[in-house]
Image (tube, rainbow, N blue to C red; front, side, top):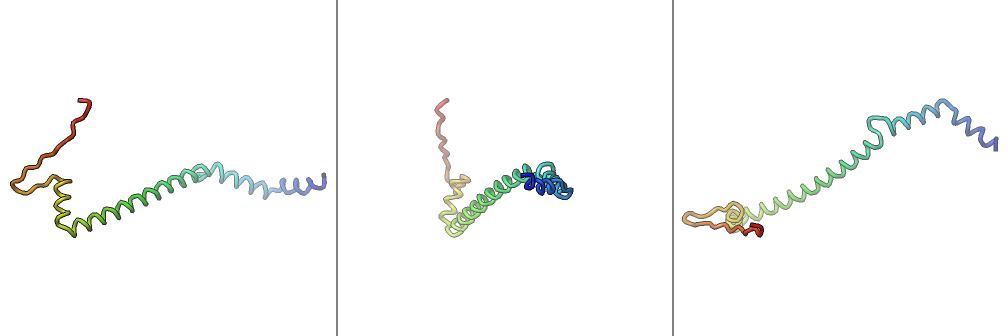
Length: 103
C-alpha cells in the first residue's frame, strides 16, 4: 500500500502540478470569464439566436404580404381601408367599437 501512495504523493507535491492545479482553479472560479459568466453568456446567446430566428421569420412574412399587396390593387385597397381607415371621396366610414361589459 505504501508503494502505491509514494509515487502519487510525489506527483501531488510537484511544484508544476500544484501550479497547474492552482491555475486551473483560478481560471474556472475567480477569473473575469469564470464558469458562471460563461454559462450566463451562453444562455444570452441562445436567447439572441431565438430572437434572430423570430425576426427572420417575421421579415419573410412581411415580405410575402408586401409582395401580395403590391401585385393586386384590390388587396391594396382592402388593406388601406381596413388598416388605415382610408376612404374614397364622398364616402363615410363608420368604425364600430364593441361595448365593454363593465361599463
